[in-house]
Image 1 (cartoon, rainbow, N blue to C red):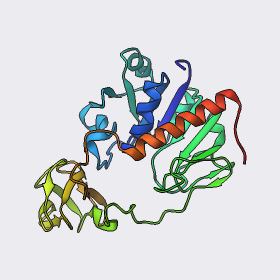
Image 2 (cartoon, helix red, strand yellow; image 1 turned 45 degrees about the vertical axis):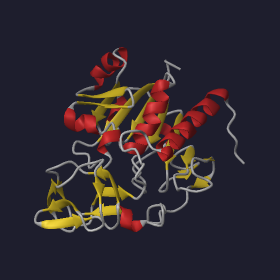
Image 3 (cartoon, one colour; image 1 turned 135 degrees about the vertical axis):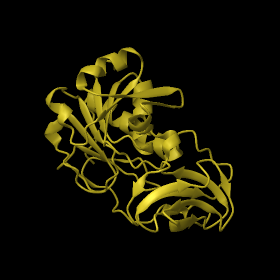
Image 4 (spheres, rainbow, N blue to C red; image 1 turned 30 degrees about the vertical axis):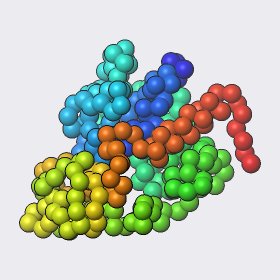
Length: 268
């Protein structure tokens, strides 16, 4: 698989799960990100490489590169290169075999089938057979990870999946525009009512007892209403390894690519 180039748009936690699995399976992977990623699950996101220059998730390292000319060097060093290129202009220079939209933007991000021989999108906002060849279902439940060859994923509900009775309460949103100031960081145990961070002078409180699973970087300027973190009610949750959902989506992307290589698409 070393001769197959997979370009992934996005480098957040779900994109990282896909990139991690494909990299370990022997594909050449290139991640594309924005210059100021608003990543929440920083400990399991290759997007952190844009901020820190280099980052590691479960034994795989990603490094920010400055130009497409640096891609080959990163691959030779066993790294996943991360390039700031949200518009995917690199496709003019590098002919990808596979392009995956893993931005989870829940809207059309400009993906087109002619970007590569195989185009894949994660989640709602795309239709298989139109913008891309395959859509992967991202909504938790029986169909999560299912490959869709015709039609779209389930529409965005706007509410995270239910975990131990909590859904919308798990998400931390900015109460106002301003700079984030941490009180605790990812991995901290909190009680209901504890301050997790401030945005300007307004506290962001835990809605229930749990673990801070994600929190946007300290000092980041954010607009009002932006998702800036999340709390998991499962005390045993691991904030430093790829999630079950991200692993499932990575496996689905791998399945899609192998089916494409064998020419065995199921259109049913």
